[in-house]
Length: 184
Image (cartoon, rainbow, N blue to C red; front, top):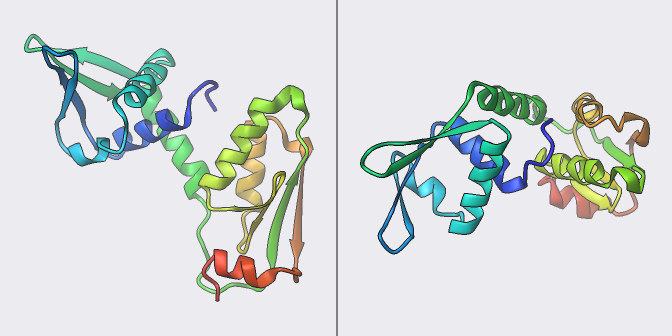
């Protein structure tokens, strides 16, 4: 996993990889107007946030910025960017949710040292993005099989020795989590 890529930049990479064009034109007032296909995909970003995200992915050689003679600027994923996007998609999207719950809970506990704070935060972010719910600050819960994917994420971040995976059949506050995952 590439280091130093903010959450919003990951969203931009996902949108670009999904086919949303990012093209903009600076106006005389210094603003920019978004053009291209799927303009609505980009309206959720604030101007400053989007520029920061573009800069981050450009700095990591995941995207290139092309300007034409009319003043239009286009952001395009590089080969490295497309590869990165596919890798992110396969890590997070490889877990298929079974149709029927097996009445078991998967708990992920982790105690990553303070020296690896950024890796711990990245791990927490990846778990949330994959659909797991926070049980406590350093513990997550999921009702379906996910250990293979979680181990893969932990391996990518080199924190595998700091995680513990548990399967439980009962929880004292089970109704709350059943409700969170739509199992009620």
